[in-house]
Amino acid sequence: MVMKMKKQYLETPFLPKKDVNTIIVDGRISNTLEKSLKDLKLQILKTPHCKELYESISYHPDILLHPVTGKDVVIAPNVYEKIAPLLNSLGIYTYKGDTILKRNYPENIAYNIGRVGKFAIHNFKYTDPFTLKLLQDNKIECIDVKQGYTKCSICVVNEKAMITSDKGIAKEVKKYGIDILLIQPGYIDLFGLEYGFIGGSSGFVKNDKLAFTGNLKKHPDYRTICKFLNNYEVKPVFLTEKDPVDIGSIIPIIQME
Picture 1 (tube, rainbow, N blue to C red):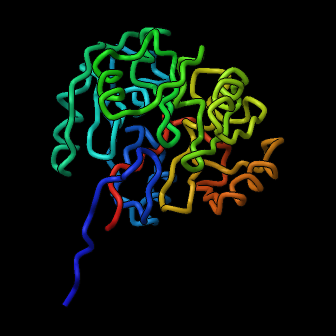
Picture 2: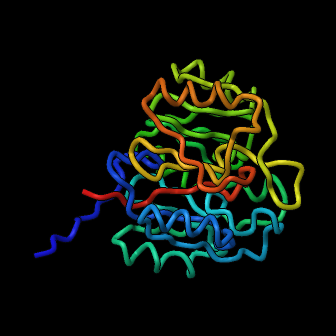
């Protein structure tokens, strides 16, 4: 008799406690990247195109939605009707945000909120009001920073540790007892732009395995990154041997019980 594994929500967004079952990724990911993810036995939900955004980020999940809790996800009105049914089929509650995304910064950052444990990190001047209220209702502590592409910029490692190349974010979150590894910017591709961000090129695929869309060996802080991850008993998984690509994060949404 084959026993079916039960699925459950993440207790903390972006930080699974068990093996991941389902992830959300950019709808344009390469065949190579998709195969690597499927080889890890992951169910893949692909985002639709958001025509109001510029092409580089027009499919990025961390631009289009934000998981306030493990079972509550706010989605931009632009793509709500396309994404919500997929998440609802998994038993996840979805909400239509108040803010319609537009092409350029800062009108495209309303849902790009960084999360590290009980903290939400963003330029809250531009946060979607509905999402902000849900964060406050769930007693998530808000750390205000100047950077608006906050989730893109933050690679969460555990509930009190993160990696970023943004000095402003690093300076501010240190005040809250979060362990920061500040790395050099660049060395991550993003179609149409000079470079992408480490948060946008990564995401957990198991409770102790952090996947990157490419190999970080060319990054000048490669060894430091690996050491930092090892300090928190997290193993890097390089999904391809190419340079990492910012795909708007790999977002774990369902884990195994």
